[in-house]
Length: 308
View 1 (cartoon, rainbow, N blue to C red):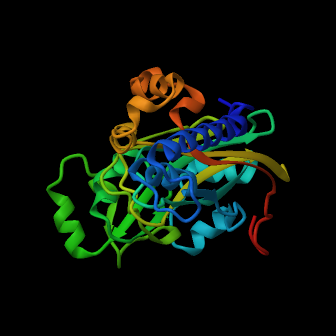
View 2 (tube, helix red, strand yellow):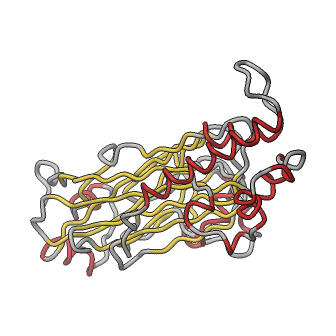
View 3 (cartoon, one colour):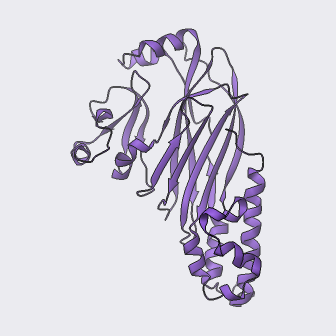
């Protein structure tokens, strides 16, 4: 799966639609004069246009995983993973921060992040975080220590009160929840937190050259930073990879149309048609995505001195 080459164009087209719609709404609300207070519709459209979404630096936490790192942490690495690390693949983990800054009460129904690895889909995604099965833990809302165990699976270290609260929740990954003082794993993110409320989470990509996360009905009321984590492997000796990232938020259309009620009948047929469509009928720029599209050529770090 590859990010379509048209992604950047789609985001630009969505901004143009919002700009033109804001112009029509401003004329109807009588807010063209500089400095005049925006009406409800103009305020909502300004909020969407001013919302800022961006990626962080993929080098910020890009580290090669080696058997020596797990040995030093007292973790018994799975025999298969140890053999692959020693003979066939170089393993890495990477955290990529996504920053979302909604403006003036803008509401969104979807946040989606997609990462594609190259060249030629050579990197293989081993595991990702967050995952849908961690939803009960993420909804708890506190910080946790997040680490990899010897099977390259995630474990979370939580305070005692959180462990008690989660013990009775169906679906929580109990076997992977540890007391924060007893977590025995190579810790990759010591203070992971998730503050998007209680969204539906979909995550996929393991065994492929991509990773995708979708959050339905997130709560975006302030600046949010989401850390997406990927453990991936490449053939031994590969020194650089390609990475493309797509991060979008789609506005809640019911919220937007409610703000435009007073001027809706005066809008052009084009915009009335877009706004009347059901969510499943809108495609591409008509979904008014706001976001970022980035490409990087990453030089992979060597193992630390003394490691394999």
